[in-house]
Length: 577
Image (cartoon, rainbow, N blue to C red; front, top):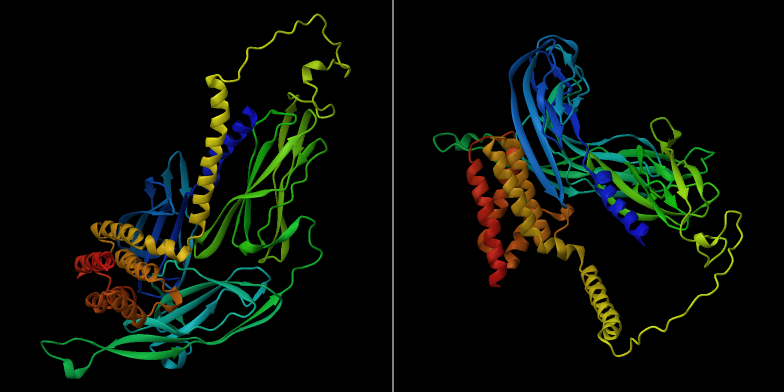
């Protein structure tokens, strides 16, 4: 029993380590291709730690216009704390050709982290290829990460905006189906804007929506064009003068279609291949050694990767003779956005019972198909487990280890043993405690299981509905922190997430159906008709700030106060009705 308790304690101690957020130091830029003389931003971000001794790279062939500007963000999602510490520079390209932004370094804890170099392609100002799409100043495009994939491989599909004009908002009017595929919206993807050169012209680009596709069978996949409505700001001469304001024109644009070829997995497949396709890592939490015969030990194996989570099965664990294993169980499974892709982290527990003493070598492995090389890859680990004699001997059930001689024979029975009559227990307090306590314990267990079952019947949508204001409050608190450090772009993005997430959870509106008209109808039907128009205006303000490059100090505090007022007012409406 003590052994099982120790095993459970070791698992509880090891699980947070396996699930701990990774410390990463990465470099990013808002443009990978620019014209000579153009300015762009380079950001170095440390994730999940606080760094010191930051050392920027040498910006060779680049002129530093400003920086570094520092920012710090902290968020809590499902109890998991994450943080970002950023150092940003605005630089200008002063020469044509390929420019490399070198590695930056920073110290976190007792370790030094470095970023990977970034390559920027600088074009001459007069470089003119074919004009942009039909010479338009704005168009939308379906971008796909690959047009040839394997079954279960993750394919990223972006609904992407290219514009030279101010776009205040957008709305997906028609979303095509994704035949023979499992599709999931990556709602938490960073939707910041970038600059790109497309067919010889420079555009501001923004991913309006990102979808992760997982093909389920071999064959062709055809994705039809999508229709997206854009709100484009333009100057109307009729409104020029002291009270000048730009006008908004709604236009419907159609994207391109996409064809994807899905291939079957190469043959032959490895014996331990269970269907995982993608990029994976494996980490093993070794059990405490030495172990004892007939006492179970727990082996935890974490597998993390970007493949289809439904195909992420427990790796087969081959055990040496003398160790008996049981079917593995999934102890935890989490899927979330990581670097713009869906990544699943799953921990499997293997219970192993040693039957004989000795020193055993256990070699866990996990095989998957790498789509980049079309080759099966096997992650391997190895550790030793020493097994000592336990209290029981498996070949002689019921015989204690100390009753067996060195040569395996049973010892002689002891003689001259005197038996003593034990004191009578019936009717004493201890007797009633032993009788009543198990009944009370059983009744408590039944009530506890019944409560768990009742909570399990609550629809996930109802849970999100109950937590809507709590989640929105957390996001608004984060927005206020971003406003205090004057990070206006991230501020408007956080207010947008708070307001969109609140109405989506509060009124149980799917993300795909979260249109302005739907929000207006739901709030009005809820009894908040006095808030409906203001809430739609708040969403439009956030979209205008994010998509039209107007994320600045102007009206930022008023936007925050308005969001707090509207969400608090809707909560009061709900309590009074």
